[in-house]
Image (tube, rainbow, N blue to C red; front, side, top):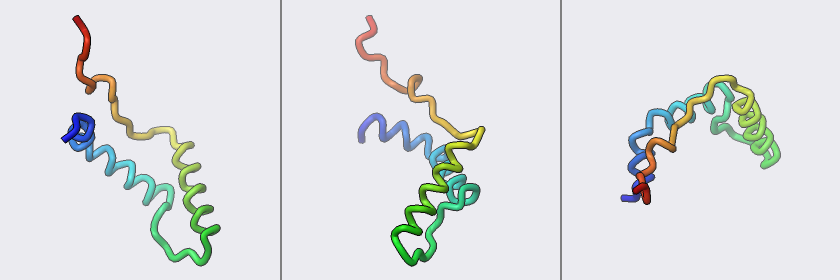
Length: 71
């Protein structure tokens, strides 16, 4: 398994939190859209709302990278 895959697997809770926020706060969920335009409008509007949220979960990737070439 790749190193970054192992790191992200340990951070699954943060990833699930982002998915939960997108579904329940920004209302991005699977509904029956009658046209592709309605689907895209719903998706884009939810992502715009997410971008304006003040507190977003994040992962500090700098501390997780291996120390390569530091002598």
